[in-house]
Amino acid sequence: MRRLYHKILVLLNITGRDLAVFLLALLLAFSTWLIHNLSLKYTDYITASVVAQCNIEGRSPASENYSDIIARGRTTGYGFIVSDIRTGRIPIFVDFKPESLKHLEGDRFYILSQDLFEYSHLIYGDGVTVEYFASDTVFFTFPEISHKKVPVQPVYSLTYQPQYMIDGELEFTPDSVIVYGEPYRLDRVEKVFTEPIRHYDLSSPVQGLVKLESAPELKYSVNDIHYKVDVKRYVDIVTTLPVKTHNVPADKKLVVYPSSVEVKIKCSFPLEADPEAGVELYVDYRDFQNSISGKCPVRLSGIPRGYITYETDPVAVNCFLEDK
Image (tube, rainbow, N blue to C red; front, top):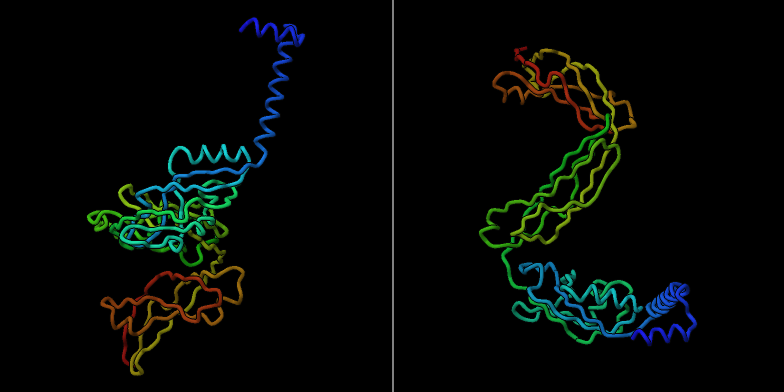
């Protein structure tokens, strides 16, 4: 072997000093050849082992079996290498739409090859163009499993910059999910919590995705919840107004003490109108009738445009009934 190697060097007139240059040139030539060939497009058969995931009510969210899906596809040499690595080790989990899977009998479901084209990029990866599938029909088994529908309870911590607040309530969808699991575990599940949603010093709307709190023994129809927080700016209007009375019988007089209280009205910014115009504080005679101590809550009427909420100081006043 050494003699042959020596004869090749002598034949090519390569000295020891030129050997490193020769090997480098050989390596570059091989790399160029390899890159060129890998960039060319080829057609060949590709196989992928697929586990189907699908939200079929009353069924396991994932098939208990995997099916080998064989297709004739076209892609680059590099694409075939990536596809072989991706599909050759462990089964691939692919999400199918419920309408794509047809019920055969019992726990058996199937999908036709004509419907598989929609999922070819999930099965073989991007860059592979499928010409046709070797099998007309692919079968999956979805066993029945206990399930129940429960509401979603978001867990969140929100703070706002001064003069900003949430507009309404935190919105989230879906507001309920189907939970799958063993019957004795499902009996204890009344709601499903999200992972904590945390946003601080908000001054503008935010939205995003949050995962449901994991429970290894349970599975959910969806794992991510979309949430949205609308934020608006407000101003505080602070004033002192007299407290009037409503619904008092004609032969009675309701005396209020104190007769005036401070009220703070939160309104959206910018103000659309004078927030104090037409605003009135009052106590209702019906509240006095239902009160044991004679204290009645102070209410607000003539709500201004852009009104958010209000608070009074004090919250309730003393009331005394007199005959006229």
